[in-house]
Length: 431
Image (cartoon, rainbow, N blue to C red; front, top):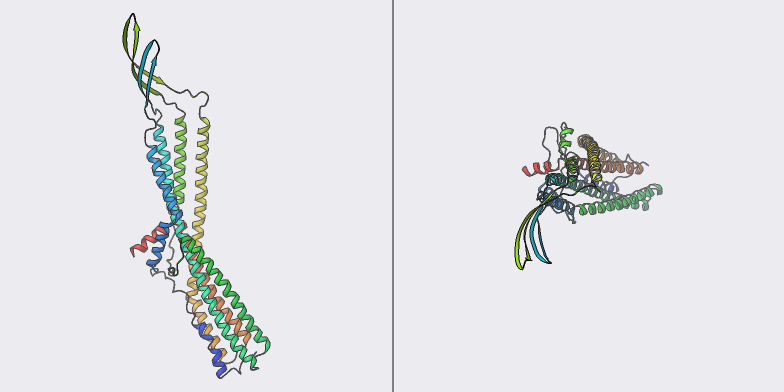
């Protein structure tokens, strides 16, 4: 439909609905170029990350596991046996009394083997604690990115709804004035209804993202800190070095050491420990009309005989546990390597897509809006074409917001898979 008749006051009113479209603004700031330093995270973001890592129940549970493992190491390093005090008394024709002290000897150094097992489990608990904090930090950043993306999409949906509502109001006036046919008016009304549905869906997504973020942090907030948009470019990635320092793999390696020490412990437990005792006493007897007292001192030695149970099954079970730990380490290594390479690729692709949008897409879109405004002002564009191109413009902006959200998610995944969470927090502190 040609709109050459839309001039004067009516055209001025219709042109006013383009103002919100121009006021939508740009999405984020320019991505950091290769020679520029990325934007440092805000102090509010760092405070949120540190507070979450310190207060999260999962992180506290992992910290408690470390404390328990440290106590087990102290307990395992203590002597295995305590001395036994023996007192006996007997009265028949004679009176006998003895006092003895016995002690089992850790002949096979089971104490050392137990300490090695506990030490390996302590190393695993410490590495797992670091892994829990790293995963929690990545979960927080990813949830924060989804929240900000949902918030921006909801804001854009609200602007779309307001824009099309004003367009529908003007279209209704023109319809009553006889300047707009029924088909074009119904099209404007359907466009407004679609915008209302999109606004409802985006508001629901925003509420869900806010609840998910509050679940990670532990409490809701009014204002969540912003995430940096200028993210660093990845240089050459040394996968082998990164994997060697990942907490998950260090924990798995520690479990292998603990399982190997457990095998050594079970082997040593098959060796019986002797018990040595020393006793002294006296015997008082009535003989030949006289009471005579005799002193006594003695040494005892005993050793268990592992005849009915030689504890071979325990050694076999420990050996199977070692095999399980070794295979689990290999599986974790493969999965960690796949996650690392995938995170690197996704981060680079997302950063490249976001940079392309900032270099060309944003400026091209701004030019498209201006061109639509000039053509419409000249009355050379119909209602259908205008609505189609307007929706395309808004959809492109929504796609750009989603690209930025994927960039944040990929960045959080890279910090987790690459073991860079603590380094990122540390670099931000030094700034």
